[in-house]
View 1: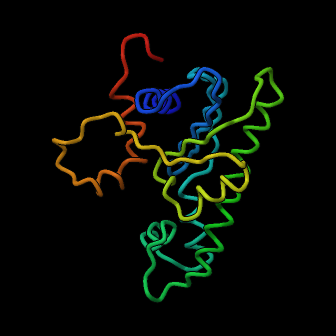
View 2: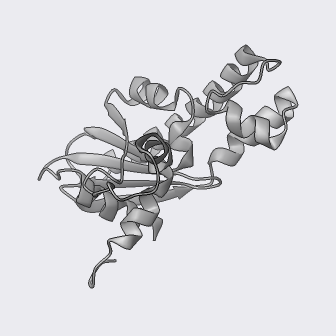
View 3: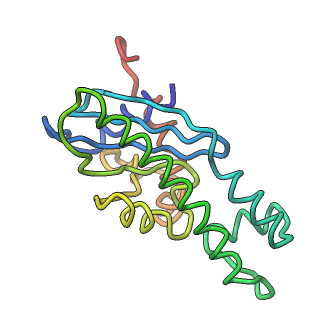
Amino acid sequence: VDAFAIENMYGINYPILADEIVALVNIGASVMTVNIMKGGTSMFTRDISLGGNRYNEALQRQLLLTHEQAERAKRGEFEEEMDKEGVSTVVDDINAEVASEIARSIDYLKTTAVEGDIQKIALCGGCGKVTGLTDRLHERMGVEVELVNPFNQIDTASCDLDPEQLADLAPEAAVGVGLAFRTIGDR
């Protein structure tokens, strides 16, 4: 359901080009979903047991952080006494693992009948905001990596949240927005 919701959200908020191949990547707490679509049609979907909890567990185990400290640290919010270099190393190791799994999905797709290369990775979910992840994905894949904004085409003028709060919430709201805009006949 998440893969189709993200696909729906993306179609509402971003232009779909006929031959464009986009990897929609939703990274939640325990599962990462990779949905590769061409021209707005899903070609391949894979759920991977890897998400934000992996970062938290590694930070807690290796640097003895609390869950709350780990949650903030993976997003670059450090407390004064934190080992910033240690956090950076742990987070980058997990970022490399995430990038490797996405690359594996893309490589699998290349072995099938789909012609063409991925032009863009659209990233969402709470872990889309992990420090250094978009850069790591860009380095590994050599394509544009964008943190999606599910509110791109939605009038948020009457929203109770200020623009900064809305922007902070955006990656995590992608599935909800996609579900909210479902219509009869959607998957």
